[in-house]
Image (cartoon, rainbow, N blue to C red; front, side, top):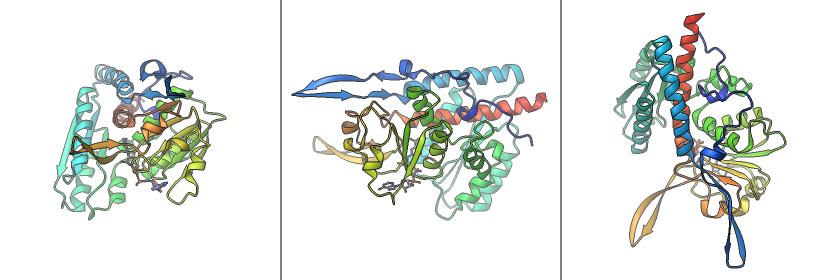
Length: 341
Ligand code: NAD
């Protein structure tokens, strides 16, 4: 099987041309930084990095790319999403991914298994998808039920169809700084686009702090920031005096999974804050308990100090889904390019 030819770096199939600042200061932002008086205090409010608007722009470009691939090469990008079990959050994520794939003009396939499906059955489906020429991207929705071996499942996906970027071969390439010939995990890829929108592609001289060291978000995020010349610190649950480290950041990425952990006094004035966290909390409204999504960042406090901030929901989440589409289109384009050789 032919591996990915050089395409368009970690943006997957999205090509913005060298040195182009991907503009969303103009288009992806709904509210730009402003000052307002409150009592005797002058409060600043950060630029809101609107992932919904930004991802809609990217969706238009991916849809056009998919249409061109079909027209010129008779290839329709195909994405297979595998869901095992009935976790409600996973069901929503999978549905959103399938809908987005369809709306970009992709061939979209979903396989749903019962929670007690044996490992062997999951692996044999992956074998079939690995060999299916209509499928260019395979995603197994995580987390998996406890009896399944997550590592064996993710490593079973062919690296050239691993649009989540979890295969060791793809992780290794990213760690080595080769973003051209790999699939960058979707969440950090989406965060990086929003960071570039604020700071450009070259982060020389800027300090970036990533809170969280997971293989899915924290580590690949740090690799991307490092490749862009930022000075990078990775923090985690064993880091001492986290607020002091966070305060050094010109760019702060929070990927922890703890509701509103990052407070206003952790932030350097004017910093760009990317909130990856998705945490469900309960609030009482008019005596009724309601469920609400919040990030890892206390938005109310941090937005008064930061220069730019992503909301939750509507920030990193939509960017993650669109980067999955971008990676799938990149994979399909690689097949087209290989046919021409
Ligand atoms: P994870 O649980 O794998 O990793 C969490 C990391 O946070 C760990 O490295 C841990 O060391 C660190 N951590 C935990 N407690 C800490 C503390 N008190 N101080 C400092 N560090 C601490 O989680 P993950 O998969 O990286 O996801 C992180 C968050 O991002 C979750 O809320 C998840 O739901 C969310 N997420 C969102 C998207 C999206 O599309 N928006 C995608 C992936 C993950």
